Image (cartoon, rainbow, N blue to C red; front, top):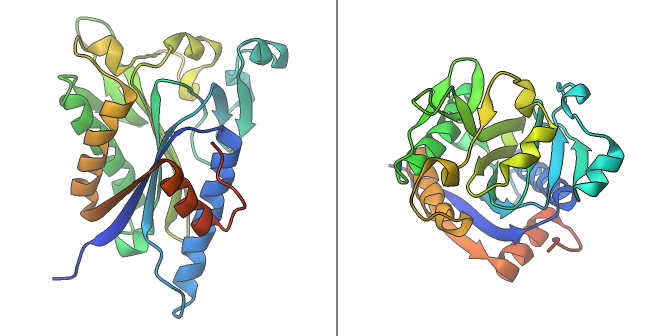
Length: 252
């Protein structure tokens, strides 16, 4: 039986959006290049876990009208806006939200993008269950939802949007932990105007924070993707990603 694939989980903490996006693209290209060159050193799968300052992002097929605020209002909210190359529409990232960027070579795991998305959803569903929150799927709507229940209709707890090039992934998921949900009032989240958003804090009486949620996310990710995990944190993680990306610096 072959040895499991290696996944390096890099915990970065609070990181600006644009440099993190550029870093993902560089590492994705590194993995693609390694596939093409049989003499290249092996490159492990990567999972970056971080938080962002307030930022709105719009996927390549999204509608800019789903961002409901002007540029001046964005400045007042201390938020930035970026058009990016993932799937999906507009979403929000900010403090209290755990964002995960898996950069995986699916040729070494399984070449099925639908299965990949359902597996990411299952990671978050199992994580929510550890806080007695029942995460669900909604047909035709990627991501993880809570409800319908006595509190109301379905509400999204985790948004997902990915990009895949030559079976190497980037972008990923954003699970609301203690997120300030008021920031979602300034968009039509994921282009869906008839459902709301929620967070683990809203749905549970248990104590919850982003750092604690990292642990079950990593554990379930390793189980479901059947990978062997090495974790790096802080400056060690930044230096490692800097090496992979060939970048001069990884942002703090």
